Each structure stands twice: as structure tokens, then as C-alpha cells.
Picture: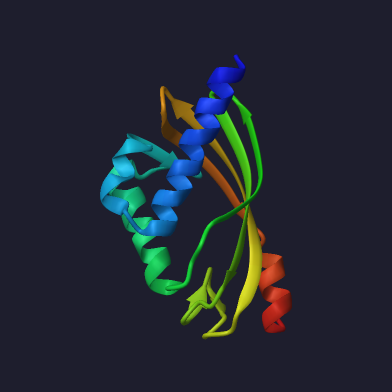
Length: 132
């Protein structure tokens, strides 16, 4: 059982490296073709488009694993971000200000690929930093 946990944790870390390295062409190694994000069936293409859109809005976006827990087939992670969005972020007028926030995200894996993602972003932290 520990071996499976270790393998799933390693796969997740490779997935995060894929995001940070912007190697979205290899996203299919980590994400199921019928992935669902926060209840929306995006599929691999839609998921990739979502991530590419995030990078366009936040060119210096880097995913920093602050906490990782694995209970196969689930992975839970707290991701930290220290970045400079160019315009709006989640409908908030950040406009080039450097901000820090976190995302609590849970994944369900099917075999070794992400099939379901539940994500909650700390928008309140962003609001405090931009004075809203």
C-alpha cells in the first residue's frame, strides 16, 4: 500500500512539474481524457485550455506544493502562489500587483491519471491584498 501511495505522490509531483514547465503537450500523461473540474466535464482539451488561459493571465504562475496527502485513489494538496496577474483574476482587478494566495485542491485518479478535480481558491486573500 505504501508503494502505491509513493507512486501516486510521485505522479502528482510530475504533473505539477508539467504545469510549471509549461509542457502542456504531455498533459495527457497525467490527466484523463474525460476529466471533470469542479463538476464541469472539460475533457483533456478543455482542461488544457483552462491552464493555458491561466498562464496567459498570470505569466509568472508557478504551482508550489505546500501540503500533499495521498489516500489512493485520492490526492489532496494545498498549493501556494506568489505571482503577478496582468489584469483581472477571478473577476478581481489585480492589474499587475504581486499577490499571494492558496488553492486547496483534491484529485481523484483513475489508474495513474486525474479524472476528477475539486478546487477551492482563497479569493478572500486576494481581496484583502487589493483592498476590496
